[in-house]
Image (cartoon, rainbow, N blue to C red; front, side, top):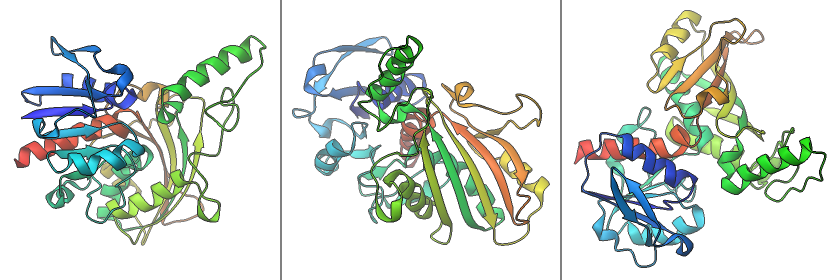
Length: 330
């Protein structure tokens, strides 16, 4: 039982490595694969030094499970090749909406793994934390509609974008000229209501991902509309979610359901500081739910505030949890 990580030196690849190191998963060997500039580098893992290898020369038959954390363009070319010899868990968006590729959050739809054909997709980070809260509520009170606004950290756009936030912040405080290279506008001390390319009807691809992926994971009957915003936060996505049910609900039962939601923790004290912010969620495996309240404009709806580390549960952690589920089935 061997594992491999493609894109092992990137943000998500490094997080995957860290999670595997701390996990109880038993496997014999780990292969680390990266771009040519990183080939030959040595990485410590569980007390041993592993040399980074080249993607072009890697023999995928060596690994039972391979994590892809290198982006859609790499996945587009290499995942179909790899899937002939290994089970692929892909963190990119490329295969998510293909009918024969399961889109999996282990706490939500683990049975979807029964239908995989050696390719399994990891959902979008924003979708992932939202469906954790939606799933148990949908099971109890059928969800009719979801309106979500996201506040997404710069780490979701990669290391260069994170570095740009730091550089712009420094330059702003020093009164120096600010240059935007990875964002369409200044990100320091600002908000940008634009993530990914614009698509149909004025929505961005990030917003459409949330709609389409939620439907695939939970139900095509749920209507979803999203507004996705990039914020000057290093790590941790936040979401304001309005959930409308088909029928009336019991509010105390809503709170009980969310308190017991797998992978989640409710922090909702209704006083100053009695909620979770992205800074506090960074580095945590948990998805936090706060500000639970009735929608005072709709007796069939509730409002939630949901926060999670986008590099952990929103990416690397979920892929490792998928691997754990697979290994239980082997």
